Length: 95
Image (cartoon, rainbow, N blue to C red; front, side):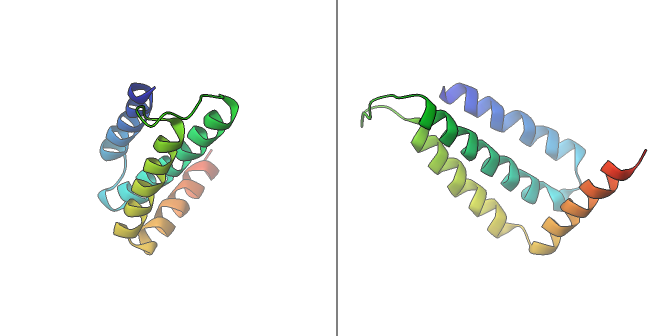
């Protein structure tokens, strides 16, 4: 499970580094991590696994994704997030 979430984080992060402008990478990475945290929470709610302190659970992954997403959002500036969202709107409206 940890390997799956690692791949789901690394692959889009590498793509973002190559496809987006440098100032847009942190806001995009932050959004990616928040989405992964939401999926981890949904999976944790649907899969009933007994809590065990020895293993990493989906709740731990969701907390880690949220923490790293918040750090990426803090390091990125707000104008960069606005730029990311306006670029997304423009590219979606083009024919």
